[in-house]
Image 1 (tube, rainbow, N blue to C red):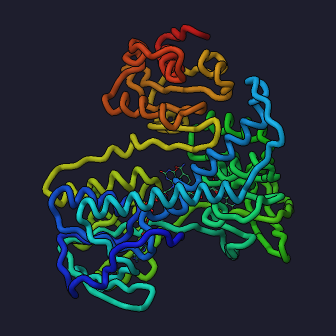
Image 2: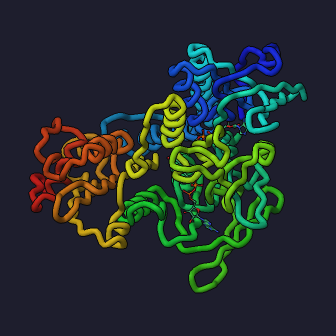
Length: 482
Ligand code: FAD
Ligand code: NAD
């Protein structure tokens, strides 16, 4: 991670300072938990091993990836659509060094923002690796080897996750890379093999394909973004193909080998036939695993499950009463906003409140262009669970707003209960869906029916009209513009 911002030295604090709450990890789970704890009047400390706050999300995840996705999308548009808009450009080219520099500036400003919030809320930031001495004592060792101990009535573990690999495949961080390195490359790869067609695979494939890299995605399951609704997968595959991304779906990667500056990848198709490809970079994007190294969990009497996650109950409480765990290190979606919700939950639980998280309504977004966003049940889940449903969808090619902005790919699909009309799932692929999905979340939180949305005035012309049209389509096939 980057070493950008500075905090007041923690080693000037008194030995064995006592806290109400100590939080290990300053990602979106940890730092948000700290702010809410401080708001509720707890004396709070955050322990972070790096010099910058914000964890994976701010340093090597959500923020830098979105910065590069935005930059490369601007370039792609300048190259492919500006002329049609009547904008002539000469000598268009990518300054990759500047692109990475801007991304670093965005990261620095965002991380500095978290440091500011810690100061504003009078939260002590203790820099160093935190590890349990016992269930109420944490030792913190900084990179100079200096140690200090603190005690806390309650401890929240928010240590996040790190990139996973495949058996016998080592991420060498030079040519066989994870998302962390893919966000700070020094050159534009000529060719890149992306192993895994999930969220990271699709986002990073978009970044590099847009600026000229020949990208191949090799995915084990038969679809891209395989956990999402299949109609979204199919439309995203069509869009990625249009971008020039080659996809090998239903291929299991068996071997990755580096020879000098080349990486060879072997995969097996459904019939057991082996296929080989080579490229100058190979990105491993096969998931992430919970991170608990050097935490000394055993000293606190804690164990991890078979997936390395810390086991928690419905209150995010571990088997040790005063210790809680949140975010990527526990069960559930590995998403920043899920980690944040859990941080707030634990703080409010400790304050004696009765917080609640509706895990069914945590939206998922893939920041390709068009963006993919979803909430609630997929069509496949409703069929599997024998829930009677009806569906309505609306394509962006029928939207005036989308025609104006030249964003004609994608659609919005809504699934509603066949009898009650309650919206059960919303699946979108289209322009600015990452923001529009919140209309669906609000609707579902208040248990709206498709007809409720159909009867609400949506501003014209907007992408949001497509949501209303999809709801109308589900309500006795009443879509107005198709
Ligand atoms: P983390 O953010 O991983 O933070 C954990 C922190 O704990 C780290 O700073 C780590 O240094 C620290 N730590 C660990 N052990 C110790 C220790 N012993 N002592 C002290 N400190 C320690 N999610 C989204 O919702 N939207 C996105 O667009 C998105 N994009 C992503 C893009 C990429 C490339 C990646 C990799 C992830 C992305 N994610 C996204 C996922 C998101 O980053 C994570 O879900 C989120 O960061 C989890 O938050 P967390 O607080 O649980 O852990
Ligand atoms: P993922 O689980 O989304 O995708 C991993 C993919 O790798 C799967 O599709 C899987 O089938 C495939 N795979 C596994 N073994 C394989 C093999 N041997 N050969 C070929 N393919 C194989 O994981 P990810 O994309 O690495 O992302 C990790 C986490 O980070 C996710 O949980 C995600 O929620 C989070 N993230 C979120 C965002 C976002 O919200 N926009 C962006 C990036 C990352």
